[in-house]
Amino acid sequence: MLRALFSGVSGLRSHQTMIDVVGNNIANVNTPGFKGSQAQFQDTLSQILRGGGAGTPEIGGTNPAQVGLGVQVAGISTNFAQGSAKATGRPTDLMISGDGVFTVRSGEQTLYTRAGAFEFDPLGRLVSPSGDLVQGWIGTNGVINPGGPMQDITLPLKAISPARATTAATFGGNLPDDAAVGDTLIRDLDVFDAAGNKTTLSITFTRNATGWDVSEGGTSAGTLTYASGALTSAGNLTIGGLPIDFTTTTGFAKLTTVGVTGQDGRAVGSLDSYAISPDGTIVGTFSNGANEPLARIAMATFINPGGLMKAGGSTYEATANSGAVQYGTAGSAGYGKLASGYLEMSNVDLSQEFADLIVAQRGFQANARIITTGDQILEEVTNLKR
Image 1 (cartoon, rainbow, N blue to C red):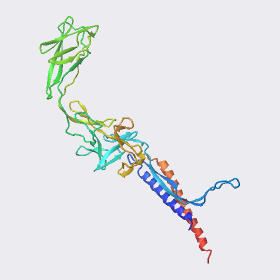
Image 2: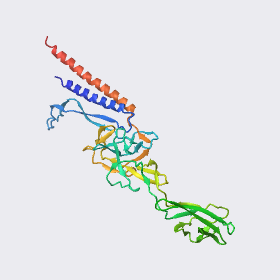
Image 3: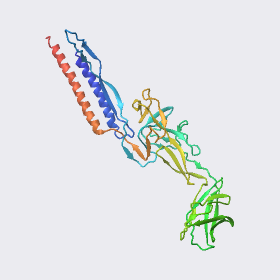
Image 4: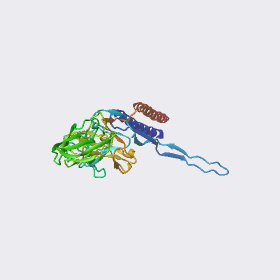
């Protein structure tokens, strides 16, 4: 039998595989996070007709004479280049800008994905469309430890921000220097105890000959004096047992803007909303105005991401050739940043895929011609005897 027949068959099989790969790429042109693949060929064993010979002073050397036995698929590589961004407006849609993959749990199996079309299920867990649980670190009292064991990312729907007792307050703005002696200004300061109960301190500023007397409930706390608008007296006073900072106040004429600029206490608050920051932190906004980190989404990287094996559902699993997984947070060295409200689309280039499809089709046709030609030769041989 002719060697060309078997070479042609191997060419048909290899180019059929190439067509299958290209077809899969085209089918997933709109799949979020999909990474295109490319078939790579290599020749098979070659039959030696004559070995190479070394030259001598009398006779020159000869090159080996070999006949190839066809082609085979050397591998199918995955292209992990960045895909284009698509704005969705959904806060749980996440796009990785740069390297890295999300870590998800499917039963007892750990998988990885670039597809960030996530959402919260009825139990408050962040899941993929196929129900895989996104992994990360859960915050405790507003503190997240990225070095700790990973858990299912869960939004605590009934989370509260605990009350905090007021321990200090600040005032700012201007006390008018041109006010008449005896003029008063009253400013209310809300303070909280450890249980979140609110009380109001009515702080009175009374103009005197040298500055402003500060009192609360008839109890004097001290005097604020100014020169050329700048505070010249002590700026820290204790009112109702609470230290208050007045150092940023000024004393210019014709302007009355003095008021409370801050205090560190608060009432208890319930979770109102959340947002996901570029480092993967889920920050909760509470009804008392507090913003606290609730959890952080973990990122994973591999030395050889091309060694990951596709596991279906736009996920990958680690292999011996992908290298050991390394976990970290988005935005740190070696890990990409996250963009909330965006999805990374497929990185398939349709123009390149259609060009590859034409190449694969012509390669298939050419190898079919080899088989046809071999068949015609065999027909001629069988016709030698009639």
